[in-house]
Structure formats: structure tokens, C-alpha cells
Image 1: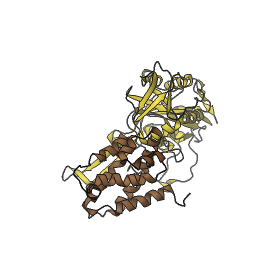
Image 2 (image 1 turned 30 degrees about the vertical axis):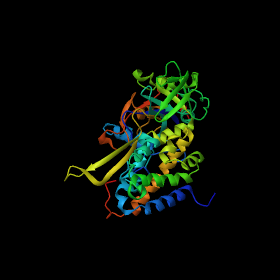
Image 3 (image 1 turned 120 degrees about the vertical axis):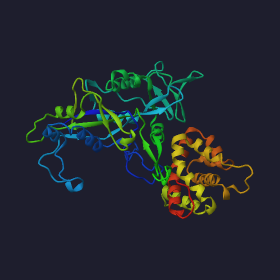
Length: 311
Length: 140
């Protein structure tokens, strides 16, 4: 089985939710159970990828990659098929969260834990080279940037660099982090050329404690209302809140593939992965609330060099 | 370990508070409970509490009986006193909740934010379960 890491870049707020909740937010985001990290489940992405290929005339090729279509929707259609799909789509996990700041407009905030999980996804190698090493740990409520000189998010107070993220005023270590710079450079390679220096200028590493607070409290919360068609005013009791990942969020996951099992369509694992990932920066609409502009994403990967991991 | 989960303790306290809200201010209390969580997430805990605090009227004689915002602040303060945030508990002995929160250090501020969000969940549930539809209430 071959695998390839992918990036999802949200171009508009992204709402992939769990359905109605009795919590603080009526329609919260889907998150990993143990860590609370926001995710886009592989099932959502796979369905959208399949849907994006539905106009292809080569139905057998699509079925070879994604699996045979079910005869009936829902659990009733979950019958054993003649062959399995060749593609395995893993969940996309938060990698960097855009957080508004007093200085530099916004920062792309990540943490040692998120980068360690990304390293695991890459399996030690990414397209064309080695994955950057683990970043050095941080003290609580501290931050670090790739380059003090080039960062767009720093403010110096009495010589001490700081970042102002939402409500949080964090001290920044007074030294460059070359490993973080490698991360910014490698992640940036998946982005369109005009955006490649964004991470070098905006990536801010914070400790895991601070990061978990941010992914709980720095998501986008929108209040929405139904309008009563009779009166043109807000309908009684029809006010609700929705949570989204803000535009510019980066998520990371893994796609894996075997050779195709379709009796008439022979595809190698690498072809399956290339087909699933599409061209550079494939546009997709993921999650709910599509008609109000939610969920526009770029699907990005590192395809140069062709050194997928093997599992 | 006291034999109950933290969620149980929050729920017990929230239901006690909500059941004791005078009928005359329930219509104002409910939307404030419903809006508080989103306000904390959007603006931060200190700003969200200050938003409630602005409802304080200098000439009000019994604000907890007649002022829904003050009542909610008082209910939250009583809940947060019991939370394992020693610095907040110490300050609440002599300060109002918004004052105490404004003075917290970052670590306690984060804990207080998270604790408030968990509490608000139970206040929302208690309000939905306790206040009858027939009572005059604003849309959420």
C-alpha cells in the first residue's frame, strides 16, 4: 500500500459538523474525541472527491478507485461487493489555525503536537525529500517564530518580542527556530507559488496548552436566523449558532491506495493516488452550508519527486 | 474524588440556580444564557462578562430579584467559586465576577474560560427544561 499526505486549505469558513448539539454551540465542529482537535473526516472528503468525478465518462475507472456504488442509499445498501475500492482516505486534522492578532492581521498558529502528528502522517518522507524534524518543546504560554526578522506577527516591547493572538499576549523566544523555518518551507511547497512565503512570515509555534485553548475558542462562531415569510422578521425560536474553521485554516491527512481490484480496470497504487488528488490545488466544497458560501477548500499535495511512503 | 463527576456537579448547581430564577425575569434570563457561550467564544470571557455587567443600574435596590443580567452573573460566580481555580476563588471573596476575571493571570483565565463554557452548557439545558413555553420569553 502506498500513501501520500495531503493538505486542505480552507478558502472560506469550513463547517464539517456533528449535527445538532446541546452544547454552547448548536452546530459544533467535528473533533477528535481524545484531543479535541478539529477534523474533516475521510468519509466527507471521499464522498466529495467521488462526486467531483461523477461526470467522467469512464465509470469503471471511478469505481475502481472509489469502490462500486451502492445500489441503495444508507445502511441497506451496505452489501458485500464484487471488489473493493483502491483508495483509502484518512481524516484531515488541523495543522495550522489562523488567529487574528493585533500585529500582522493574523498568524498561522501551530504547536509541537500538531507538527508531531503531521510528521507521523508523512511517515518520515514527503514528496521529494525528508520531513522536517521535531520542533524543540516550548515553555507554557510561550511562542516561537521561524525568523524574528521576517515574521509579520511580532511586536517588540522593551526588546522582548511578543505576539498578540486573540486575547492572548505571549512572549516569543528571542531566537530564530530553524526547524520551524523548515516546516514553513516544506508546507509552503504545497501551496500555490504566490502564497509560498505566507507561512514563513505568519507561522507561529505555541505550546500545546495554548494551542488547545485556541482550537476551542478561536474558531468562527456565526449566529443565524430563519426569517418568517409572513412577517419578514426573525422567526420565533429560529435562532442558532454555527461553528466553522476560519478561512485560511490548514488541515493535513493521508490518502493511501492499493492497486485497483476492479476486474476490468488495472491501476497501480500511484495512479490511484494521483487520480484522487487531482491536479495542483483542486477546488472542492466540503462540509455543510454550501449555499451560504461555506466549505471552499483547496486540496494540495507534494507530488514532485514521487517518493510516497510505503506502509 | 467525591463520588460525582464534574459534569454532575455543574448540572446540579445550574438546575438549582435556574429553578430559583424569579418568574418576572425569566424572559430576560433565558436569552442571556443562550447568548453567553457564543459571546465568550467570539469576544473572550472578560468581554462577555463585561457585556452582562453593563446592565447594572445604580438605583436598583434588589438587582438579583429584578435584573436578569445581574442574576446570571451572581449564579455564575457561585458556580465558579466551586471550580478548582484557587486564584479565582480567592478573588471572588472580595470582588464581583467581572472584576475577578479581569485580574486573573493567563493560566487561570484560560481555566475560567473553559469552566464557564462547560457551565453555560448546563445553564442552557436547565433553562430549556425548566422555563415553560407558556412563559413570556424572547426568541433565544
